[in-house]
Image 1: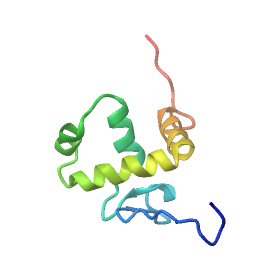
Image 2: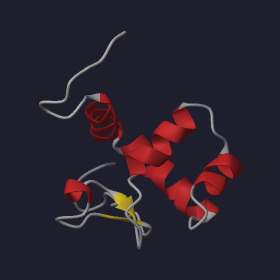
Image 3: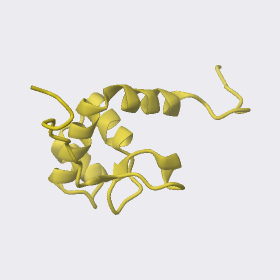
Length: 96
């Protein structure tokens, strides 16, 4: 049964959004590391230990929280990843 009274709302204790920090995108709490960056690292084949080496201020729980957030908000995070692949407006693209 999933009505508004019985539905459990999931919280993300290590994920936060702050206006003015990474354009309000979800980040790891206490950092400026976007959830999308952790997810993209994982998509590129990095395992937990490799991500922790790349981001030494993070703990395993932060990486797991970022991936959990991603699985619950896949479209949002995929959109942010795609947006970050685009060159900034007015940037020249050099293709030798």
